[in-house]
Picture 1 (tube, rainbow, N blue to C red):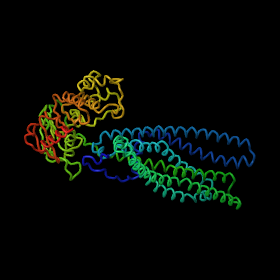
Picture 2: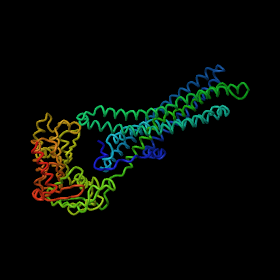
Picture 3: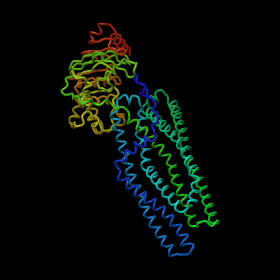
Length: 598
């Protein structure tokens, strides 16, 4: 099921939550490129804030100087001024929202591209220890949460802060006593926000982690649906899903409950503030202190304008906490160790003859648990080397080391005398061709799937490669021929047809060294003969490494290396090994007798 348990590789260690301010700092770095847009947006926000504050003041002036005195002409002037201010603030609000959306979308596109580029540079062991669903959750859900915060929350924060400052300054200008009365509830708001934010952040982080695990489970079960049905495990898988879904529901409800507490708390404190302002203002008027009805009306509005930004900041807890949790998970991927970079002295591998040597090679996926032990092997140009042995003996591991999907612990591997550690990875792999038992085909046309072996290949070269792979005839019979679009993983083709396309792709790539993970173990005898013929066409003139499951297919190999418990315990051609009557002899006899019995 999970790849983390395959091939003796270590499980992924749980990662600790990063510092929120550090995460915020990294997010803000992405915004630096768009400083002009941000500057214009802040100017627009400042204009909206000033306009809103002064518009409220004009309402108080209208009450004291025009409504009370029945000055309708002056009231008309004030109304005209208010109309102009509101039109201006509306235009500025639209402009700053538009600019922040543009910036947010561009930043998220940059993060998504950087994340995808990073994935291309991660070593194979990362994918062996991380479920595809978990990784997809980071690329999609977590990036979307960042997008929501950048599109809306950051502009809301700027506007709320400026509104707080502008409103507070005007309140102090109008009346210090009423300002103090309005500020009674502020400490309670701040404390409540801090308490709720701390708890909700914890639950939002846990929610994202559980969502990633649930996505990984869904992806795994969908991919293995045939196995689930064969073993009648539908009910068990449904129960497992229900358990993980319930876990996500539990922590999701907690996160939403804590973040949802902010609104009711703020509403109650707002109502309390209104009552305090009205009572204080009325008492001041009764006592003959400098106070007017217009100022009291202003303070009622200002107290709302003052607490509204606090409410809005609190209401952004949901999206901000989800964004921080998502950003932390995205940055965890971006901070993963990449494949070792080529050194300045790394060389290009040109005109490869195919002389491959493994000298005293040792390797372990996990320290203290060796997989290969002191492996020595020599392949002359044009030879076919076959690896046989029980499952888990280390056959595939040798292939992973030849391709530098993993790097050896000690020893040396050379191609034409060049240490592969001193060869550029791209150059090394471009000279290696691999045909795996589990063929992967992309959701594209057959033509483009074959062309994946060499992107600049012509249609005629693709057709010739398909003919050599014995794939041309079945492709020609398809309704759209080479333009037939394959379903996910090539599911609309048979196993044998998929293998033929993989062989055609390798033929087109024209590698100097070929690696074959037995491609005929899952097909019928007739198809196997076609694939074997295609493989013979592919292997001509190349150094070949073959992982053999059916021993009858490698009887003609120049050298057969028998691997058990990470060591080469026997070597020789088929006749030599059969004469020894050792481990290979027993493997071959048992398999042959099993086939005879069938």
